[in-house]
Length: 213
Image (tube, rainbow, N blue to C red; front, side, top):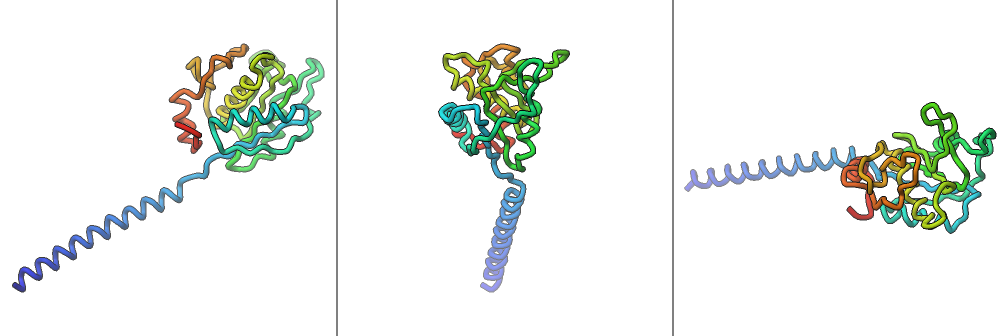
């Protein structure tokens, strides 16, 4: 009888130690996960005063349907020192530099304007563009100056989300229906339907919390 009791006690202690070991490992994994998990990125929409509130609202609505963590800032004056007199345009890289200075860690800023913006492309010093975002970067800019009159607000949102994708490290995508396709000097936004699976997975790994998967 004593031998059986000792055996049962030993088995109980063994099972208890195994359970404690499993619980301890689980707690350590959770602690590591909590320690390494970064907060999701917050998109800051920075309108310049040249753009109307209705357009900003529609672009914001479009972005929120894809990615909900968005905050709209108060409109600010357009930076006059970005003006390129020779072509009557505004330098996108200078606008991004301005916005980046005000963008803190964990945020990314998209500037919205109606101005004609430009950037250097290859041997062309001043190439007119719809938007610009560095890969990666803290800020980007989008303009509706070169967009079609028809469906302009939807196109504008797609330009904005494209540039935001660049700031997270996404390159251009070969998928024709993806937000990240290369415009190649044209305006293919009406063909775009969303981020392709590969681009979306990339952004999820960057801790983007999408409205729907």
